[in-house]
Length: 507
Ligand code: XMP
View 1 (cartoon, rainbow, N blue to C red):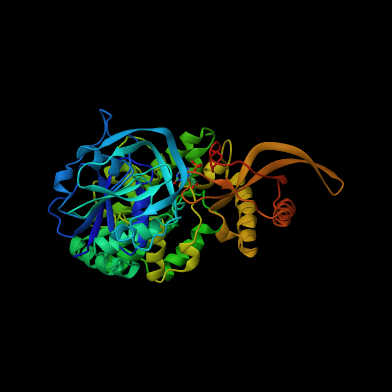
View 2 (tube, protein in one colour; view 1 turned 30 degrees about the horizontal axis):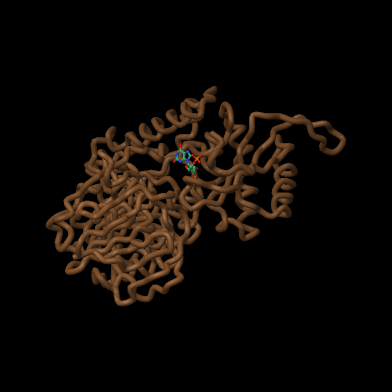
């Protein structure tokens, strides 16, 4: 049985991060809403209570049955989680005299405490709370303090229960990884056996069990998630998996051909469908970005559905959904963070059962699984690319001619990033075709042609992004190459906006 840590989510922005940190300790964990603890699941080795946007004394504050956790499992409360346990046991939690955000230094540590093992006085921790525990209940004792916060960490005697008011999961808590390791490995007894290989073995076995001899279809996009899902399923059920890769005409230069070739080399049973003419027809004259997205989304579903119906007796639709997508859709505070759903509506339309073998993995874990499955590095490290593709990088209406101009310029930029060793240093990059013409001079001729913008950003999750500070020499070379080689472009700009307030894509 796969041992696991349960992270009860009280709605904090950093809950996912706790999950990632635990996984980095080669320990499997699941994030579940605060009121959905899997009582009775024998594989649970310990529980972490997350932070929350609420105060424990708010009327709307999220509560959970602490008496069914404390004393039954090792428990670590983080921030709100720590305050909740102290408050419910009769301690006092009050608004901090000054809200505490940012770094603090541990000035006192109870060295013999197992949660504090190998953590030194002077370690930096990251505080982010408006409330603080001012009095501990009976049986609770302090195990760490900072200058400002006497009760920075506590322990409950006679049980395996701890609380920390700081955030060990964030990068700026320098002792955070050690503290989580002390809890997960030292206290909960994780055997640290979770790895890409163990995931592949157990998932392949589970997929065989789940799918038997059933037939499955999967839509490939060229992106990492759907590709890894396909290779994993292929390992489990071989030719019973049919992959469909639709060319909507808005892909990068030669992308359709190259990626199809990669898929074939990986042994996938893949059908490539060139539906570009249909999409060009439907997009003609459309300028509104959301309309473009809708047309492409719907067109994709229709083409996929048509193709899938040609295969007999399909029972399952597989998708490369990953953990952050699931957590976002479970979001307990109701804040919708992501609104891009490429193939939203596909499962409903097709009336098939859903199979999502990567739904519990973070992006970096998906990559690790891909590597373990022997997939080529260029597929695994591929930049994210929007589902509607170049359609949202052509401002204004779309024509085959504009797509072709943009493909050429984009190809020079992306190839340049690769040649200069910059591709892996940026999160994503591309060129935008602007609805602007400007005057130029080439030879003795006056020109009046298009302008393009180069966009390259650094990011860790696409929620925030900074413009990539690419070397001037590189930008100069790319600009020169585009203007000399791409007919119809006589001006190149570089986008130096960060997100927020801008977005990564222009549309
Ligand atoms: P923005 O432009 O919102 O983009 O900063 C954030 C990330 O999402 C990608 N993106 C999309 N992906 N369908 C997608 O599958 C879309 O309609 C879409 N719009 C933006 C974008 O490339 C970036 O990675």
